Image (cartoon, rainbow, N blue to C red; front, side, top):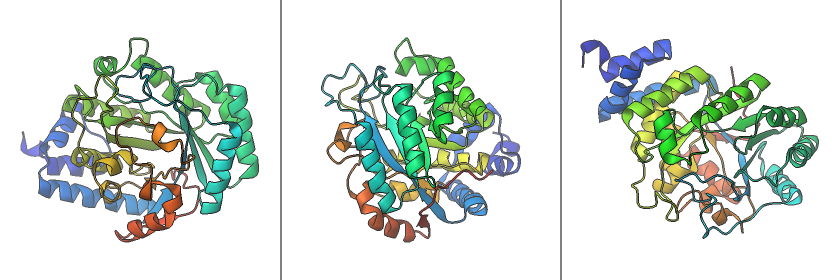
Length: 351
């Protein structure tokens, strides 16, 4: 490693230029010692404070269906998992979750689900329009997989503000190794570009530590985020699910995930970045570690209590305790204990 490409100098370069080469990303991802990591977190927090202060935005997560046509090898709701206890929420149930969430103080609702054909454009447009009519001061975020540009456009015109669609991995060969043959990275990327053309606030992201992933793959993920410039970036450690082909594979680590989160904050200073449920699943303080590495969003669960465990993307997913919307006061105290504050507002991207 040359003197110009030590982790410390690469962090300085990232702060200054917001970009690195593929080789530099690999060196930074693999080369951080504890002292450099601590400095990286300090710099990420400073950048986050300069844009968003110490505010943490909350999103009310409504998991509308665990029925999915896809067969992703890592996902507990894949269509081949016959042990999954399937469900889907009606529009009335979704509206009831939103009403409850609004009373609690949520001003963004995230409707997330598998790729379930029950949720047609007509149904979803009516639902989005009703949410926006009832709660004009709220944002509606959708996370419903790949739907096509015409569908995305209709939903946007109905009032949807944001769309989350993680690319999962930017390397085509690695993508093929963790997805069924009918799914293509090129299709996923075209969806993301279509969402940006339409005008959504767009979220992408990737798993950390998924089977077969290398530091070079992670470097490609960072380069893709540089290119896409999404308004939101969600990353989380891979966690296996017992009823999938990857059920016996080791999980990703909280340590590498929060390090990458801090790098993303330096690269994309204005991004909305969640401290994900997966972090809290692997580490009781994982959510706090994410906030202290530069994250500024938390997504408590607003789904009906009897469905939360059924939306099982990975084993031991947190869906009670401070992950539950009902525990918002407890969550506020935890966030205040590390010097931040939860705010009850939409929490839009600040360009």
